[in-house]
Image (cartoon, rainbow, N blue to C red; front, side, top):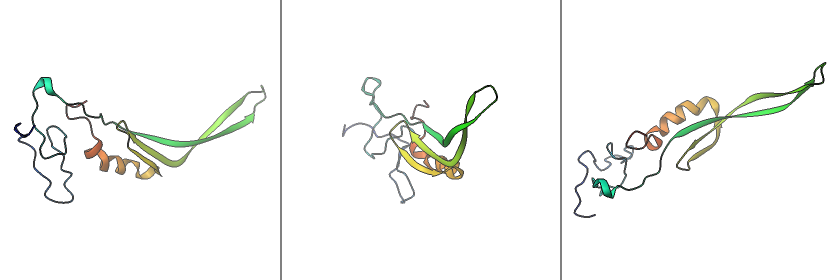
Length: 113
């Protein structure tokens, strides 16, 4: 696609902090172009999810002979994205800040899905 029209909102990364992602279409390559409706590429969807780790054990048997499962949080969490990214276990208190930090790279697909 060398003669295709480059997206007007894209600028190459100017600093190491700049992600280089296009604000309009989400592509990273500086040569990406606006595509005709019949020539739209497939891109991975991004949707971050946070799962809190828990642990459980059988509770005591009550007078009726029933036994319930006791569960409690461990203080750890894992962040995963539909694209395959996983954070591994992190402190649950850090999860919100970690998701906010990942939002630019793993935010919704360019068309808002």
